[in-house]
Amino acid sequence: MSETATIVDTQKTASKPAGGGLAALLACSRPLVMGILNVTPDSFSDGGRFVDPAKAVAHASAMAGQGADILDIGAESTRPYGGAQPVSADEELARLAPVLPAVVKLGLPVSIDTIKARIAAWALDQGAAIVNDVWGLQRDSAMAPLVAERGVPVIVMHNRESVDANLDIMADMIAFFDRTLEIATRAGIARDSLVLDPGVGFGKTPEQSIACIARLGELKRFGLPILVGASRKRFINTVTPAPPTERLGGSISAHLAAVANGAAIVRVHDVAETAQALRVAAAIEAAR
Image (cartoon, rainbow, N blue to C red; front, side, top):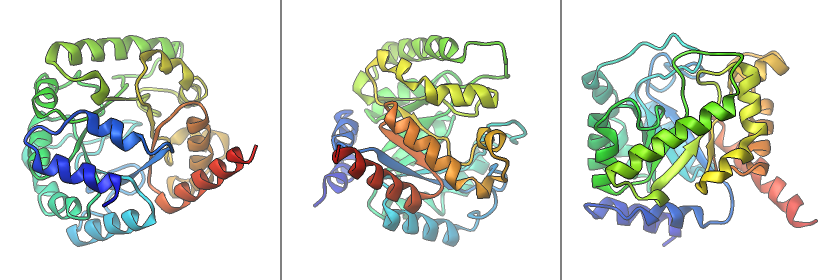
């Protein structure tokens, strides 16, 4: 059985999966690819494509076959540029219920992308292995205690309510993560269960999003794994104009730069192409 499969089986059968499971997954000594599955009608890039449960599960299966290490499922659009329509927990659950259990059965670690502790708890009960909170434990006060109780890894993303072009975005990010880590510590979350996400595109100008990737190394002070999700984001359009579905080249370029600057995980729409690019980049680096 593969190391990844062992982690999934352990987390599905244990009532409180060990936080060290994340460290074991990252011990692959290569960047991990997280495949995005949005079961929403309004996501900025692929909203509506996978609302049908059968199509959603088929897409998850395809990403698994293309080299995804983790599958990230979200049922409420967070639309990094505004305009997202909040949905109730009941609606979010209704979108997830026909999809998430079937995706768990594919055998890869599944991450639940939600800001609601109630949804995260349900997903973990169904076999999800990771919580992905785009407000870094700072929105739902029940999220940190839940993560601590379940002993699961949690991705904490930097976010802002509004954009401030005059802000030193990295200084703001470091202060944000200091608050997040304080919340995590108070709740009893194991430090090695945390992954930092700079939140490319969220509450940031395109220039600040580029700076997040260029200055990613500044987050190494925390000594935690870093995830970057630059896939199809608007900053690519400011460099080379293209609609979201035509930003593959820019997405791969951004993720290669992120990995070079310390990212351990990249969150992507285009799994096969990204996995290939990472393998080729690694082979070239190894031949130095």
